[in-house]
Image (cartoon, rainbow, N blue to C red):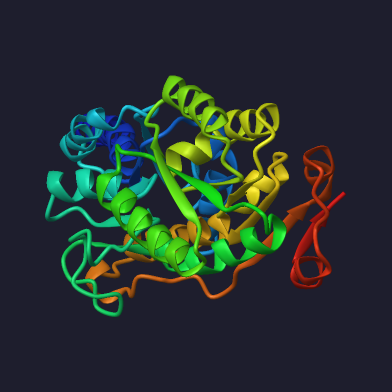
Length: 327
């Protein structure tokens, strides 16, 4: 009798570690798929983790992450997305615009996806509508191309004599680049500005684009809203200073890094929202029922330290509207 009780107790002792291991495996896993590299995404990741924590999930404690970074090589995204699907992650979070989101959506129709996209997710075929996305993808969008007339207006106020302007886009995200080119061309025509379009999809092409801009003697530059450009903002800002080109950007991170001026929505707010969505999905919410969020506030930032070497005086009309003035 005693021997039977001993065996039973021994069996229980053997079973306990197995239960613990099963519980550890039961911790949900988020697959984080990014088109760029970790460094420039630090603030975005922090905002994402903050939103996630607001739903009760903390990395390393109640949820684990599988990170996949394409390092700017967008052609690697399909394989990276497939790898996350094969690892059976619970949610895929995409960063870097519609290309990573499309790679994830093409890789799975069942794993929920929470995406940060900068373009038009409906036109990109990612969702059915903003209010009712349908399918397995939701998230936050910037709808950045709609800001082009406003950006050109600001640029015209700051550099009124710039009759020739340039636009820099990333050809690796063709749908967004085409929409940006279309909208900037329309805005430039209304302002009677001549427009040159340059494309750059890697670091060396960015260098080459600025050398071309110098030869063209353009008066001002638009830098298109793009995750790759955001990851190379230090390079872009430095080149604009080296070639003395007044440039406007759509994210405040550029102005904070030394860019002349920026106007657009908050990137970190979008990542915080997607973090909240990822947590809600882990709790059972369906992406099809979570509306894709659009920005509600926009930030205008002017950098007076950058304006001075360019011989520019930021007009009172811009200073009065600026949410932040760096000096």
